Amino acid sequence: MINSSLLNLDSFDNSDPRIFTVLLIGTEGQITTYIHRQHTLGVTEAGAWSRLLPVPNCPGKFMSILNRTMQ
Image (cartoon, rainbow, N blue to C red; front, top):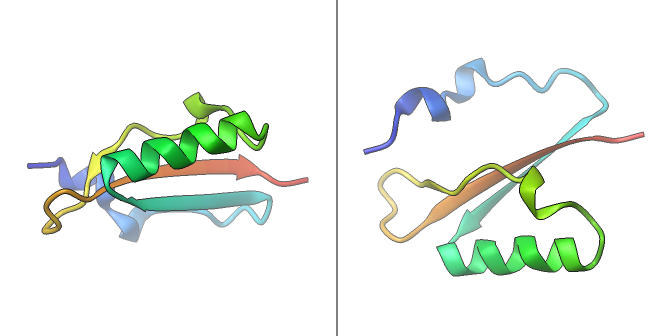
């Protein structure tokens, strides 16, 4: 069971127009592969992504979030 406060989108604040948020949802392998590919291409550091969180009511699915400031 995940802590529901981690997923409370009602309190999610992305009102700063410079903040760009990317949400990945997929299997653990898909997400890990995508993050490592983005790192290899120099798009973003692998450590900038959130840890993998299980998606509620979706067995085998996970999510990871990245917030970046866009210039």
